[in-house]
Length: 191
Image 1: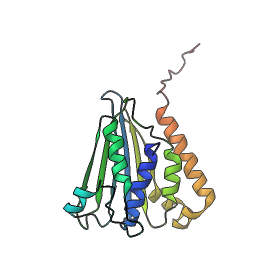
Image 2 (image 1 turned 45 degrees about the vertical axis):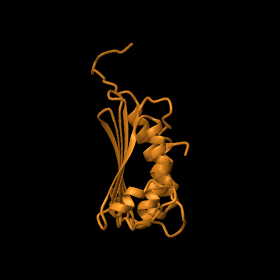
Image 3 (image 1 turned 45 degrees about the horizontal axis):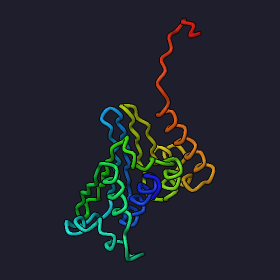
Image 4 (image 1 turned 135 degrees about the vertical axis):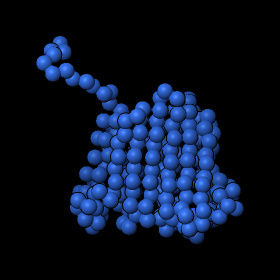
C-alpha cells in the first residue's frame, strides 16, 4: 500500500468484520523523538493467542469472505522497513489492539496519506462508532462519529452532504494541526 491511511482503512474493515461497534484510531507523531505510531483498537470478537501469533501470516485470516489476509503482513513489513515494528494484543470477546511504529523521518516510511478520505469512508459505516485523534508534537485534532450523531442523528451518517462535510472538516483539522502555531500580540504591529 502506498500510504499508511490505507492500512488504517484495512484495519477498520477487519474490525467491522469482527463485529466491532467502536473503533478508535490514534495517530501520534513526535518529531523530537522521530517517531510515528498508529494505533487501531476495537471492541470486536478478538482473537485467540494462536490467532494472534499467526495474524501476520499472509495465508491466515479470520475473515470468511476470502482465504488470505495480506493486510497485517503488509503493515508489519512497512513498519519494519521504516525502522519500527508491529504489535498485536487481543483476547477472545475483548477486542483487538494493533500498534504500528515507524521512524518518522525514515527514508522508506510511507506517507500518512489521505486521512480525510479514509475517515469519510469509515464514518459512512452504519452502526460502528469511529473515534479518531491525531497528535502532532503535543497538539491534537479529534473527530468522533458519536458527536456527529448527537448533533445530527444517526441517519445523517448516510447523507452524502454530511459525508462531504466530514471529509472537509477532517481535512481542515489535519491542515490546522500541521500549521505552525502563531502567537499574536495585541497592539503590536507585525510589519
